[in-house]
Amino acid sequence: MPASQRISWVDNAKALGIIAVFYGHIVSKIFTTYAIPTAGLQYKLIYSFHMPLFFLLAGYLVKETQHRKLFMFMKNKFMTRIVPFFFFNILILPCYFIFAKISNRSIDLSPLFQASFYLNLLAGMQTLNGLTWFLACLLSVEVIHYLLYPVLRKSRILLCLAMVLFYIMGWGLSYKADIINQYITIPDYWFIKEALVAYSFYLFGNLAAACPIFYKKTNPWLNVFLLLLTVTCLFATFNLNNGPFKVHPVSLFAFGGYGNFLLFPLTAIAGSMCIISASRLMPSFSFMSFLGRNTLSLMGLDGIFSLFTDIVFINYYLKIFFPVQPNHFSVFIQCASITCITLLLSVPFVIFLKKYLPFMIGYKKDKDN
Image: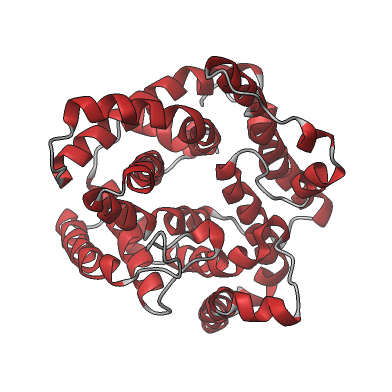
């Protein structure tokens, strides 16, 4: 979207969302590496809503696609989803060799010469860069929407029913996945299982786009009220949903780990609306706009940081910020500092990619961006 047509609060919301992604990966690594309870609580909070937020915003921004021919639709998705998916998975490959060289470790190259490695990549599995799961899942969501929206657009009731039905189907597949897999194996190509739940948030965003409160100027006190309401709901509910995993008691969207049937969507929507309400109250300034315009590239780059450099910063900062008994403030200071550092380190890479390799990250050259 050209800069002149962008919605400032949406850029703010996406910027806050990508900050939450960077922060969430740092605090999750602190928890999983050092088992610090306060880090675990913040990890649980961030993961309760940060990815549903992006699917909701994608649904809010989607334009009607039923008039677009199938070839043009698939060409667009190939350039904006599939090419960046492969690019960020390949871009991370040299980092493995660099890391092995620095740490004096040997690296096993045998998987690169196996057909299964490339078949998994073609099947939309984030073979090397874990964060590219979002691109794969978003592609599946958009294909579903392309096929169904000509019918769903005829009635808001149909759209609401589809939103509920897709959530039930996606949650049901994950809830009894171990039992279902004993009888039938359902391949998760391009994260199609997670796309069922993601599509319900996508449709929620599409419904929100028709609500006057979001596209018309409203009394700022209404946004303040919504912010307070959603913050209260978020903090009251996020710790009640432990997710399905015993080792990491959080909701993990990428692994189909949603947890409680009612608490997961309630907390996810509350957290997303909290970010949106805060974004509508924020002034627009250049750095946040930059982050909001480049969330795709930043996600791909954070896949590199979270895998190779975050733990280095964490180990260094442990000596500086952590007292004997870490508290929420000391964990926040550490994670916020590392988040700022990694975001700033990402900026020159994003600028370089947009200038010299825009087609690899889903962009056309645009003087306004």
